[in-house]
Structure formats: C-alpha cells, structure tokens
Image (cartoon, rainbow, N blue to C red; front, side, top):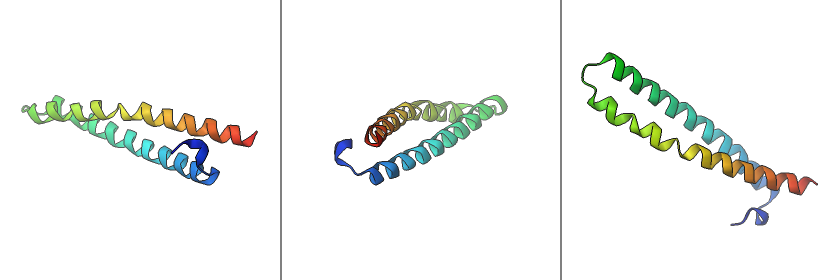
Length: 82
C-alpha cells in the first residue's frame, strides 16, 4: 500500500512503531555485541562467541532500512501539513 493511500493517523502510528522497534533493535543488538566481545576476551573457548558475533553484525543492516522508511513517512507527513 502506498503512503499516499494511508491516513495521517495511520502514518503517525507507523512512525511511532518504527521508532520504538528501531530503538529496541539497536539496544538488543548492542547488548549482544558487547556480550560477545566480553566472551571473546574473557573465555578460553571462543567458538560460541565467535559464531554469535555474526548475528548483531548481520542484523544491523535492518537499522538503515528502518531509518529510510521513517524518513519517507516524515516526508509524507510534512507534505500533508503544507
């Protein structure tokens, strides 16, 4: 569904949800990355932490996509306010 077809209230709700989801995603991925680095430094058996460190690195690609979607929604909301 195109952004122009959605109501202003629905767009505001989506924007709020995207902000919340992106914030939580950044927090969780940051925490996982820190735990993995800590495990790599302190533990002798690094195999688990070496495998797990790939997860936050791979999933961090979602963050720019969310910011791009938020930018599009903000632009649409600004165009409706003019």
